[in-house]
Length: 255
Image 1: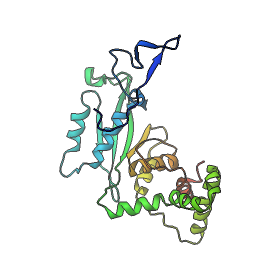
Image 2: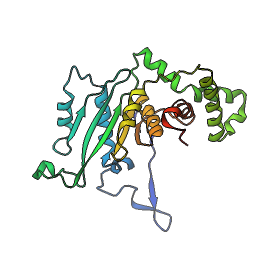
Image 3: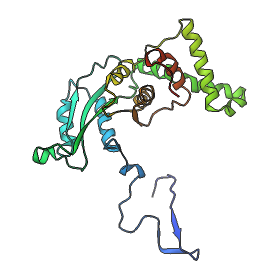
Image 4: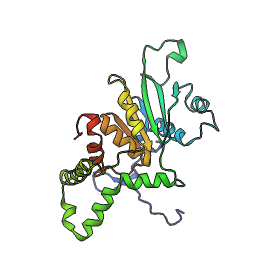
């Protein structure tokens, strides 16, 4: 009984076209999982990034986040938490010990010759009870919504390649910038400044959930750092305005 949910069952056929005796796609006795479960980026799994992002929603005044990290990751991973300003948006910075094997040698024998340190910047998502977060979401993703509305009356907009949409959005914001009418006081500004300050030779990843995932994608694009976004809104059209507004600091737009 699946309570009215849609269920798709995959089966396989043998060379003659008939169903095998064991027609399940998943081998008998195998443990089902998602394709992403075995994926790793900079030595960390999707679950690692999810847990690190989850901590951004926890009030550090109510809980000891370092203790929570130890409970979640030790003895398999050693993580150091750094204090962040979090002026407009909750975000955390971690130094994560990533080792060639799954168990850090430094925790076994005192040697860390096979391990390296990776900086992870995690950004919290939107607080549904915060009017400020709602306004920030509207500001950041107004262009895709406007283009969708305009496409109802001008269907040819749907045929525009991304380069055309990007050019239109960028041109609008260049004009606003020239007229000193644009507002580039974004919640991600302090996160962007921090990521830009990380040395180029240092491994760094930005991650986040929801609105924080969108911010992670934008900061990653502006700094050319790897980003892992969890259920983010799209930045397909809206990235252009951030490239224009941050171009003076970044030395040029990123394509």
